[in-house]
Image (cartoon, rainbow, N blue to C red):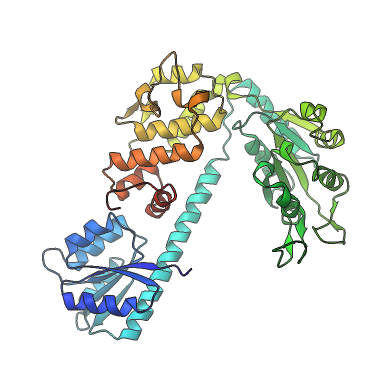
Length: 456
């Protein structure tokens, strides 16, 4: 399906709007919206995403230059093409200095206009992609900081740094959300392989039928829909580190093949006969008790012994409560993009210290993120942790974490976004700024979660 680009035409001459809409619509890749003045344009821009704007310079009440300034201030990724008489060179220069993507004179040449519009939407697409990439890099990079004030976590870090210099297999245990991937990444970044890839495989999220292919690759025609050869992740991670997260969920059919690879470094692609070799370090992790899995016949004992060369156990958050205050402070800083950042009251911090956090650091992070959004004041209070009918109290500390009221992370994010949209009266500019995401990302999440907004 061909992606359609959304174009806004702003001109006080109805005939120009009509003609531009007709000609651009013929290309079949544009969705055209027209308005006759700057005020309507600015209002529409706040509620609808556009890839490019064709903007008349001279309009009554609010000029095209004023609308251009508004777009540059609030929607800098939108490519703006100014429309005016060829003779008005001074205005063209001014518009370019203010950030207009290009300038098209009236009367315009159809082919030149179409070429300019195409370049503009391509420019917008690249800008948005770059923003999303920078956001993802920032988000992932910021998540690599390890907060360790407790003696228990200091010991974990000391052990991780001690084994980082060797090439030994490391197995990390601990409950979900405790930070096992962060420790694995720390071992990699302080090892001799730090310049090579760090590849993460979540074994629990990949179906058994596909996991072997994901790990070791497959040859063309190895199975239905294997239209071409595919490298496995062990090849991608060659010379680096392969992190096998939730390794306790690997099926019994994959376990012997993984054991052979761990012992020899050799593997075969699915459907292949050639033995291949990869030189990499293996770090595994699980929230399961693999000794119990062995007793239950679900996990190979020899594979457990091979993984269990060095074991690092990460304690749950309830066993290292000294880490809670610095973690709260860390998430408050990370989740707020505004200058006037909200703080948390001492009373609530005391309550958070008493709670057992069954979801560990991940649960704490999302609780803080939700409280930031729900807070109406500079100081976050107990009432701001409202995500279910009951409120946070000394007796029932964080209600949305009760076993009978657990929200998935997607449900939690949807609640956050809906509340933020309502708080800012569905102004997407203010909402995206408060959430710390781009308007494009906000738009995509609204569509993903089927959130109803007034214009829909």
